[in-house]
Image (cartoon, rainbow, N blue to C red):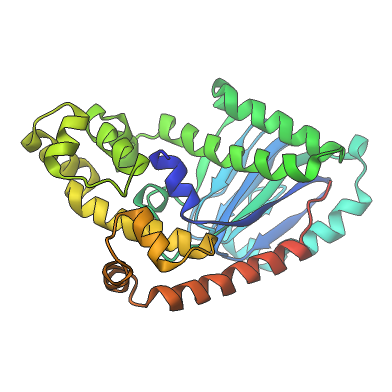
Length: 320
């Protein structure tokens, strides 16, 4: 896979949750921090987003916002300071339950899509880790045609549950996450990873490593793949990515092994072969050095996290 796909897959748990929300009047809700990423997309009207320690962010029609680190926040009909928000805000789930039944589509003042992606944050790829607390994509997201198409398709599916919606909705939500991250990378004025993936040498090397992490890579072979000399690769890659190519590969192999332990029933020997280790013992040693626990214990802990997410999913079905 490519770097962005791998970075998302390494942390993605369970099915995302989504909701089409219609509201009117005065309202204010608080969502506490959580292990995941959340989003809001304003379809009608306006609202304000307030994260701890920051100024309120106005959101208007066409605006999209991603909170990639599950930051606690307040969403409200008007700008509030932290003290007022703390006093007025009701818990997010309570607000959803109380607001939705009494608001008819033709009477609503504000209409939004909102949702949650559940994430395993134990070892995030640096691309995901460097996403800002709030990714605000104002109405200019219309210039990102694939993002606008995903928003329109998602809104349509949530308008009316149709045959195949149970398959279509999670797929559209996954697309939405990819497209929001792409849009951030296009609009970003800072951050290492937009520069990394925009650099022809570093991006070529990363594509090769992520496409086949089990290959017997060396600096010479990777430099040939990127079409540059070994010193040029080492200098460009290390400067941009923050670690030498082979150190990055060693780290990524272990992270990939963790994903396979979490998401598949494969044996440790099978996983070792898939990520480029000659034996389960070699993988186990590298894994324990990175994670501070054995692969077996990690798999058991990951199963517990996944079960918690599935329980949460059952309590929060997709709603119109």
